[in-house]
Amino acid sequence: MVTEVTNGVKVSVEVEYQPSYSSPSQHHYVFTYQVTIENNSNKTLQLKRRKWIINDAAFPIRNIEGEGVVGRQPVLEPGQSHQYISGCNLRSGIGKMRGSYQMEKLMDGQLITIQIPEFKMVAPFKLN
Image (cartoon, one colour):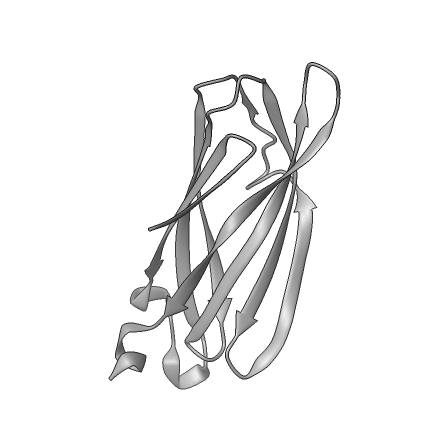
């Protein structure tokens, strides 16, 4: 698990290779990642947007942006957390992701950027 704290918001990510959904002979490797967002600040925040940068070993970098996370824009009161699971497909079986969330302070509408820590995705048999 990797963790990063920005402006009192802690983001933790845990990744897992999914062999039953992958097909290495077809250059298709599936990973899931569980993200936990903890609001340790004293402000109520709403997650508005996400941005991901995906590095897939020998392939071009992909940038993914969009609203919310898995169809939601959760509101986090101080001390609350939100957890979700999503996935990523790689063609090489070795890669990494990092990114950021854009969150709004509901008190005054100010937008802040929260960093998502970089995490690696490696099919276990690629390490041998």
